[in-house]
Image (cartoon, rainbow, N blue to C red; front, side, top):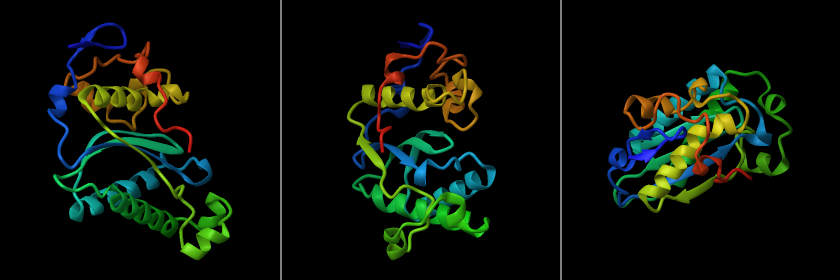
Length: 200
């Protein structure tokens, strides 16, 4: 057991994950183009969910933790054994989400900002930043720190006063499994205040 945000014990997440699999466990930060506040809109969440489902059908991976904020997301994935190709997975997810978003909106470039000459040459839709940030999870302690960071992120950015107030997060699954108390995050753990891939 380790202390939660209020000093109350909660189950060690190593019991939840069990191991670092050979395919690798990765923390990601992915940001929208020009930090546009799009990701928490219902239509975009639906498009993103569908894109992930479609991608996982041919390129499986496990989502260990997740948070969706208006202009970026953080998550932890575990890939299958002997498969480290997260770049293809993100490319598919970003492309499918972008296409769905542009299909349901009028004037995609006008909605999400000026389309650069470089993006025009690459035929890229202006929804996501081109790059993403990744970090290889190295240990159970590293996994725990990044889970804390993910779940506290809405409070850190001022979107909620308490972790449990933000609906777009895997926090509720973790709490239901006894990994956090339901009131976790009132006084954030040190790891939740750290910097993990924010600057893009």
